Length: 359
Image 1 (tube, helix red, strand yellow):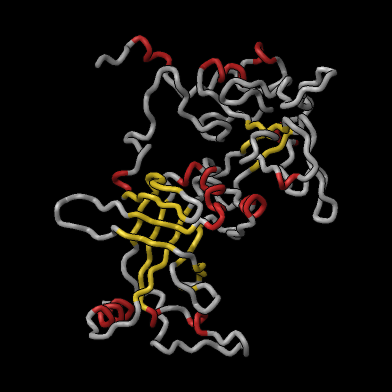
Image 2 (image 1 turned 30 degrees about the horizontal axis):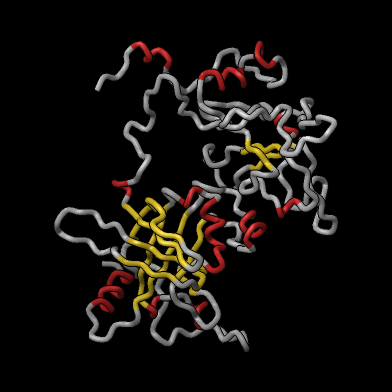
């Protein structure tokens, strides 16, 4: 038995154990790798990490530090983590404060964080980092009055995934959590044989590989021309610069096209931008999202492409064979798509259509 395990066991069996500390993490890296926009649209700064750490208690006015990470204080309520002997897997409920609907904006733009990993960490107060006991007025070093910090003395992590949003109000949002065994949209084998639907992730280097200019939205709205929200009397419906190549499409800038912190600008009709995930080597997580400006604006950060569909339209694929041909068949769009692929990388299996599934 390790020293950390022994320390934890002593606290568990103690007549008067220290306070049990519960800490939570939400890993939303599968949803929105570029999370700097949260500060733009909701004035919420999660930093550069895609893991948001929080807890239901405060350390004065400071976060709680554990294993070198800061857990921000937030009113929360969690229940249902207990395991029973009847064979049923627990489905905990997690309620998070939603002041002025700020988190509603974040969750709405990220598919309610469905399938994001939630981790509950538990330890005793005596094992917390010394950072929690600093005298911030005199900058004196911390002194844990409960015991000796031990980052390895903790209960096993409880790992669940967000299954669905149960309730949403102006003051609180409630989620239902499930284990990995009950995770929705998880299949074995991972790739399902479908005759007329492509299972590749659009623009991902694995499978699809499309690196051309935007073509259309998932609803079939053209992003080549005629996409303007408010067409002028001259009939200018908007047109993107077809001389662009994918590598020359600029990344969206919160300060606008050619702008900076001291010279804030916006975007014009037809401007094309991309947003690329950061901090990962996983090709699925760094797949770029491409947007076309359909309505000019003067302050870029007030109209983020992820959430403002009145000013931006996202280039998406309807996952059909025809949609694939629009992007890779040179005879349909000529040199516009600048494709160097001789065959369609369609992720469906058209040959299975002759064998329909009978119920």
